[in-house]
Amino acid sequence: MPLTTIEAIRSDDVAGLTYCRALEAGQILLFPRAPFELPAGDRAFLLTRRQAGAGYHKNIAYRPQRDRVTGVVKQAADDADRLRHILRDYSRRVAGFAATLLPTYARAWRLDFASFRPQEEAGRSLPPHARNDRLHVDAFPTRPSGGDRILRVFTNINPTADRVWLTGDNFERLAERFALSSGLLPAVQRPSLARRLRRLARSLGLPVTVRSPYDSFMMGFHHFLKGNLEYQQAAQTERLAFPPASTWLVFTDMVSHAVLSGQYALEQTFIVPRESLALPEKAPIAILERIAGAKLA
Image (cartoon, rainbow, N blue to C red; front, side, top):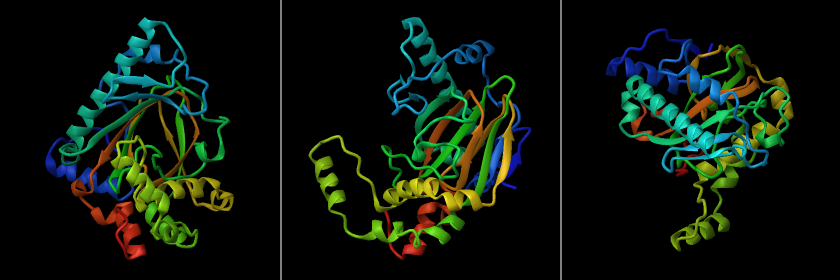
């Protein structure tokens, strides 16, 4: 079972290393009650927020580096300001909690986006590659990691309903099965004119995203898994129900997961450098480089 329940935080380096090893091995760390403050007024306010209808906004996002919120419907200035403050406070509280829990990571991680997910996931209408109810591992199209890890912290703020996930095989098993047979790994190892042109454009100051072979594989693998209906139907899975007010941490580039149901969740992403890992050989990039016999970033 990929779930480890923690009732009380131990905040020393030895405990932190234990938590790091568990996460990197594919465990999900669950706190049945949120281990940081979530004011009732803030939670009540969030339950009234609605997401913008544009297809490119999958969630309401908060960008800590810019102190900016995107993906929400037009609202009064006071409400917009309050939403920004609530998401900023959530981001800061989660960062403080996670730094206490995982001090080794906190010394070098990069604080990425936070998000609020106000839509009910059951029956949600999304394009196949964007659907949350299909098993996948995470990759970000506009924010390539270069081989660093994607650590995410989720909080269910729904007052009455669980958030329900399926989890499947970890990345190592998936890569052993599909990295070569899908054709994705050989494809990203070949010289790419498009990649060279993107690097040139980036060197000229143009705002383009340059992906390493690793990032190109991970993005393609994300789409491959979601689009592989035979895999989706035959995969061995485990159903996990995260209760109201719970918080959980997971490396979503390691644990294949799908969201079956649930409404109103908060999330904060951290990018953890490879150099900070307790088990660097478990990192997806290390697994892929072993299979490929070559560097991918």
